[in-house]
Length: 384
Length: 168
Image (cartoon, rainbow over all chains, first blue to last red):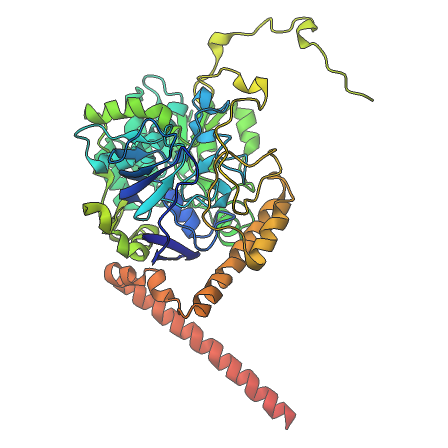
């Protein structure tokens, strides 16, 4: 089968790889019909996530058709159209039972700090991902969800990560009616988080980024204010000024380890790898939120550590909430939002690219070419 | 001194201000304290361990399922095995993994060459997209590369010439 093949930082290609096998009685094999490149895939692509091995296939956002099932699978049948949450969850451990499906304890031998994730390095379990024609999906009775009749596959594929992560970012921000929420990052997650803040009753939603085309997109898609930090002398000071000098009620870090905006963070985090990426967005979030406010983090950081103003967290009495999205927990609500027209996930998709052009797709997304917001990959077998 | 377990419920005032209604929102919204019972849930069936799976030393076993993407191999694999002797809280774990990743890139090139394939770095980096959507930037980068390359070659030639002159 055709599959994306990681060859090193900034180098990927499409290769023939063996068809995946059922390895466990509760496995399923899915024929992929749509997969996305996620902003967090770029952290792998840029070589920032430890234990990313040459030869791996990335891709944790995908939908497809059940091709084969293991002997214990009961909830799926061959031919079902399914969306597959990005987290691999057993549904049986103490954490899954509490709805923490992003923190499963039975899906990642290589690290306890993160559950298994499709196509996201061996630090996240060493599973090949969905940027391929076929993919092995463990715990088929737990994660995969049959796509509701009539739902557009482009909507469904964004329900595997982008929508739940954006929604959970807003949920974790503890938004009360009328609150001002500042979101750092106008990528797909930041834009979706901005959209979701309204669902929780925000009174003002502000997005900060440095790419004008993304800010314009966010303004139109999420009905929010959007500002380019390059045109602001000091983004933290700007937020203080526009919030009557008190700070935002909640701030969301939707950027993670590749934030721009600080030479010191960029050099030490992204160039020299002296910290787990650049934590500029988190810095700004902590410093922009009001005393007693909440900082919600969904941006991805590496495991080693980052320079952040933890003293300000203490002195301002900030609550920090963070997690990988618990996709399975959120899906029923989010499917309802999509079907009711309150959320329009496919509106984020700007590029539909054949899987065969995987190298170009990564470069377009990474280099922010052609006003790219969200690229979707279509495998050649998707039309069968 | 021996640590003797205490029955915490006998501690004066224990739990007097506990307020289950004050449980915060997600991530512990649906808190059941299941983990207080320890690692004793009914585990899913074990995937046969028929490849090498590196295991965090912060857990007692291999997870019920695991990925089989790319088992450790070669020099990078040796370094990864070394890294897994250290816990996830240790730089001894992560820094060797980062080193292994970089070595693995060269191993990948050697693998390609040994199987008769010359990796097309230009294509793998998706530069046709750069040419299509950012031609000016592409040309600038190419020119910068040529200038720097020429400078390096010139510097090396000059160095070699100086050496040979010195030998005379």
